[in-house]
Each structure stands twice: as C-alpha cells, then as structure tokens.
Image (tube, rainbow, N blue to C red; front, side, top):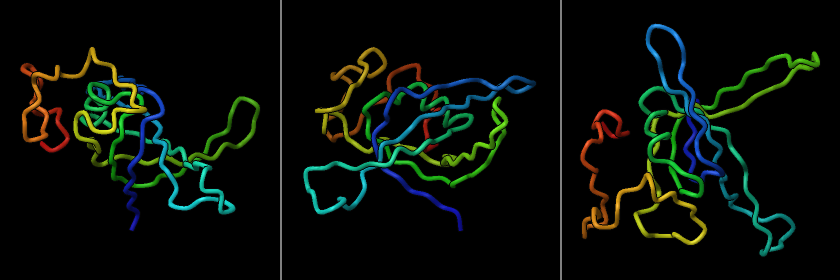
Length: 149
C-alpha cells in the first residue's frame, strides 16, 4: 500500500499552473517542512526537518491556491510517486513527490500564529470567525472548491 500522511508548514505560497487542453485543470505545487521525530547526536537545540514536495490537482489545486499561504501548518494525505527525466546537460534526475488526495488546515484560526506568515488579503476577517473555533466560509466561495465536499 502506498499511503503518506504528513503534517508540516508550507515553505512558500503554492505555485499554481493550469493545464492546457479541452478541460483546464489547476496543478498546485508546494513544499512542506515536516519536523522529524528525533534529534541527531542528542543535541536537543538542533531543529531537523524534511522538505517534502507535494502536488495537488484540480479542485485540490484550486483550494491550495485560494487558501494556503507560506507558514501555514497543513495536514495532507496522498501517495508517494517517483520518476525521472534527463535534464539539458544529459544527466538523469530522479524525483520524489507526494500526490495529494486530501489536504486541510492543521491549526485553528489564531492558534500558533507565531512563525506564521499569513497574507491577510486572502483570509476572512476575524469578525467572520465563530465562537466554536470553526471558520465561517465567506460569501461567494464555491462549496465545490472545499476539500471536504
């Protein structure tokens, strides 16, 4: 079984491109910084992380483009895919990335804002947050773009 479940912070805003052809589809690429569960050499002050390339297609790609920003902590699940290609210099390059099936926010709004670099222009205003810890969906957001639909 090929299944990966990761939680980490986005190292930068997702890079989104749209495929060409009869049915255009969003392809979002981003990198997650995932903390390791152990420290090297017993030095507890050294922070170690892996940087995992991730790809989201179609509605998931549109969701990432609309809502994900650098510094956000997200939870993803998908499958690991490897590949290779020959670069311009004639060298074979091997790739590994997670093809995302599901993705969601890992922090509730306002939790862990230290270290987060949210872009407020694309986030709902604090007045739209309900008291139960869930974020209200702003008017005009297409329900089909949400990951749990």
